[in-house]
Structure formats: structure tokens, C-alpha cells
Length: 301
Length: 301
Image (tube, rainbow over all chains, first blue to last red; front, side, top):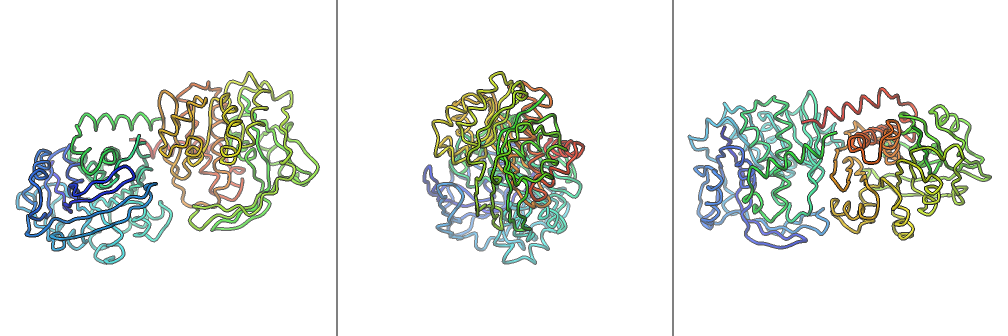
């Protein structure tokens, strides 16, 4: 079943201990859409400038991403540049040019509104809520947020979260949102804010799923080497939501949710293997399923 | 089947964000022996001073630990004191008084030598090798080491490792020993040094097992709150080796090794719940098996 993805489409300048590249296709909606595209139809809602390359349009089209909701605005596409420290522990932002993304006002095409699945990438909570209201009948709604909104617009964020089935954030965001250092306590507080399911991403250490009636933890995939972790969290979200949409899962389906966490981990791990979206763009469903089976093999006891 | 454990017995002064206590029973051999004692007979080889309390002797006896190899030397028991940072990320040593441990020369009682299982806690590699030579027929030999020996006595350590079936170290030690930052590459290099099986402990993030023919990764147990992580790594070693000895496992038994990693994780997690050996001392096999089943429940997909 189809999945609507809202977020940013950007050009990224990335420097890692292993290389450097500029104006790579990036942005949360790009990674989420590509990650989800292997599981079923995806419809994107985002804005780009008049510098957005035809080759990037084609890349998304080739992955079956519906671009009716990809607005073209006069001006430049959102540009971000950053550099990773040698041990990967720090990422320093060098440039953030919001450009056309500064006035992003997501508009859902009529053809999108009956989609049963919606994922709200990291944008202002008020905009996320506005999109959510346009899909009142969605079967399963998930979303992401970040430290900026937790700090700057906590009331709007709290209001927005109440209407989501799944919140998907990383461990430092979970600690900040809950004010608790301990993961179990943080999860309990966040679940009380509204979402039935909380996914906490832990980078190379894996991910955890929390619900009122239980939890699930998976280790991360041990990568031979990391080229570029940019977009790994969004690729996780894409694999997670894409899998759920692909099998038409209900929000309370424990088994599907656990498997979705593994598919999220699979997509996040692939993302790190090459710069930008390169590895995701060249993936096959066979490779994805093979890595899923690797997860089964290296975690069973 | 019986397990011989060699290492330190100490008194610890510990300060954590949640409390402070002095002269707590500690030391690697103590934690390993107590951790292993729930699975089968344990025989300890260590040295204590004339200040070693009768109540501590009784505690070990009550857990069925054979004390024939616990030497009493004139002088004071090894004393260590340290303080944990607020976020648990750093541990600063305040005092290290080796006392009688400075001249520790492990002597294996005749009755120990036919034990099929041997675990060499973290002491000088040359002493570990000396003990190993006294049990040439051991079915499964495991051992631990630390950054001090990796840095100061690399040749002796390399020589010693060659005769072990299992090396059990933490992630920073694995990086230091291999000179590789990446865990998979580090593991490959270390396996080439001799041990058939390498266990890398990753603190709260769990543990990984590496062999030439495959690997296994488990996340850590999510603790409600940590009181004192002192001894968690040694408790892991105790659960790991105790389980293998308890079921008479061969060194190449994949299934038993994976389960042993989970039992190790279970014992390490319990250890953190109270100060010193308090939680281990009060445990039951029922609680241990219940937590093992929790691991099954929260990792299955």
C-alpha cells in the first residue's frame, strides 16, 4: 500500500575521513523515499529550487517515487555541508542554506490523501501537524523530529506527537525529549506523550522499539567500513515505514513492527557503505532480503 | 564440570553518581567465581592478606567456591578505589595498593589440575601462561587481559594468547590489541593471533562473538538503573565460562557459545544493579534463567 513521505530534498556537501564530495543529492525525504521504495509505492512531498538536476528527478522516478508532490519553487534547493571527525563521533555543520526550503509549506496532492501510510520527516512540528490533518484516515502515521524543535517549539511538538502512531528518533533526542538519561525511563515518558510505538535509533549500536506492552532491541549491523553515515537515520525510517506499508501492517502488529525495525537497520547499514544516496540507489530487493537473513543468522541463539 | 578461575581478590572503594562505599569485596576472580558459581563447581586461585574478612570467606564458601587455591599471605589484601563520572563514561582510579597481590604467584592445588575448564582473569600474561601450562589437558581455556599488558608486554601476551580457546576483552582493548578501529577488522586480526573464539564486550551495548566461521551479536540488557558497573565485565566472564563448564561444552560448540554470551550478558547486567558483589551474592538460578528468557523475548523477530 502506498506511503506518503514529507521532508526535505537537499544538496549536501560531505567530508568524511575517507573522502569528500559536493552537491550530492540528499535531504530527509530523499533518503526516506529511496529507502521505502524497495517495499512498495512512495509519494513524496517536498520542495526543490530551479537548480534541481534532471538526473536527480530521474533517479527518484526510476525508484517509482511519485513526484506529483515535489514542488519546484523559484530559487535554489536547500544546501547543507558538514564534516565528520576522524572517529565519526562528531559532525560539524559548515553551511546551512535553507533557500527554497525556508518557505516550505507542504501541499498534499489530492491523489495522495487516501494513502494509508504517512511518514513525517523532520520539519517544523506545526507543518507536520498540518500535513497530518490532511490525512485524517491514515492507518499508520509515523514521524521524526530533532533537537532544534525539542528545544525551540516543545508545545507544538507535544501537540503534534499526540496524533502519531510511531515516533522514530535517535537516543540523544530521546534523552532530550524526556529529560531522562536512562533509555527505559526515557521511553516510558515519551510513550506517555502519545505515540503507541517509540523507535530509538542508537547509531552503530542498533535500535530499540518500545510499546506499553513490551520492547524489542536489535544490535546494529557490523559494517566492514563506513564511507558516509549521512542519511542513515532517514534510510532506517524508509526501510521501517516502507516495510510496514508494503505488508499493509496495522499499527499494533508486534511481529511486523519488529521486522520493520530490522528492515530499517538493513537500509541504514547499506546507506553508510557509500557516499550520499549512492548505495541505496544501486540496491536490489535481493540484497536487502539477504542482509535481513544475515540479521537473523547473527542474532539467533 | 568444574571450572578453575585465576585472578585477583580485592577490597574496593567505589564512588558512583548514586552512592559511595569502601572496602567492598571485589577483584576479578571474585566476580568471575561468583558469576560462574550458579552453573557448577568453581575452584579459585588467588591471594589475600591477613585482613581478609571471615564473612567474605563464608560468602564464597556459601556459593560452593573451592578455596583450596586461595592463598593467605602476610600483609594486606589488594586495595583499589575509583570514582565514576556522572554520565558513567569515565572511571578514575584514586588508589591502587597492590599489597600481597604484587607478589602473586598462582599455585594450582593438585586437586584442581584435572578440571576441564580454566579461565584466566586479568593478570600478567606470563603468570597466565604459567597456570595454563599446569593444566595441559584442559578442554576449554579462556582468558582476559587489559590495556596495561597490551601496551607493556605485547610479546608475552601474544605468546600466551596462542594457547587459549577463547579471548574475552572489551571493545577498547580489542581496538588497542589489533590496531584497528573497526570491530570486524579488529576481530579478524585478533583471531589470527590464536584464539578460536573472540568475545568483545561492548558495555551497555551488549557483546559480540567472532569465530573464523561466523559471528554473533547481542544487544545489552536495558537496565532500569545502574548502581555500580564495577565487576560487570568479570561477571560476564563468569556467566559465560560457568555456563560452558556447566553443560560440558566443547570449544567449537557454536550453539553453546552463543548461549554462553547471553548468560554472560545476564550476569553482567545483574552485577550493575547493586554495589559490589551484592546483587550477584543474592541471586538465584531462577532469576538468572528468567532474565535469559527475557533476552529471548526482547531479541526475537
